[in-house]
Image 1 (cartoon, rainbow, N blue to C red):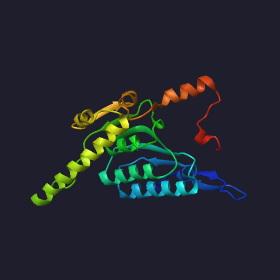
Image 2 (cartoon, helix red, strand yellow; image 1 turned 135 degrees about the vertical axis):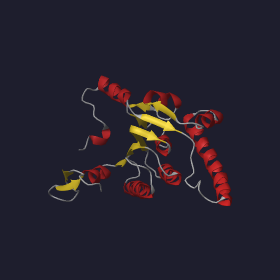
Image 3 (cartoon, rainbow, N blue to C red; image 1 turned 45 degrees about the horizontal axis):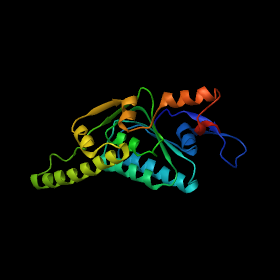
Image 4 (cartoon, rainbow, N blue to C red; image 1 turned 90 degrees about the vertical axis):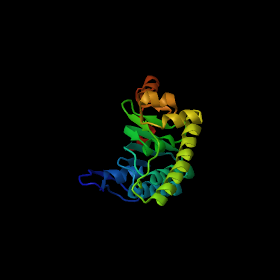
Length: 216
């Protein structure tokens, strides 16, 4: 865990008294996960492992994934995306800060109608890039061919889950496309802008509080 992570009192089921536990461990117990760094193997294994465990523990209750990430490794991001589609609980994806590159792909992978962006979040999509451009020519050509296949696959997923035509997504991915939360909603990357959700519930129930925190 990062240095300086605060601890909070938490009563583990079966214990008579609360003990001081790392904040993130408490959040994990409440089915709330965080992707707050560049996507690499370590964080990927961490998040996918927690998703699988929480799915085994309770296959019905939703899981919440908060995202604030500049993106990262292509295959690692795809591993998180595939795990989200495999586990039985619905996955809420919530963007705060930025979801760029593969992080926007993971944001897109949340359960339809449960993909949220905070009002000042930024979402960016672009085409995947290779980290092996310094390889010798034969390896480089193989890498380009593989990258082309992966790019087409990712483009098809974006098109399928946003409802945009394949050619539109393909052209947009030729460059860095930054979007506000409202623009991402119009594009189909998210379903809800955070302030809309809060306003909707507060208008009908001033004492409303997100379901995920009601038992705290």
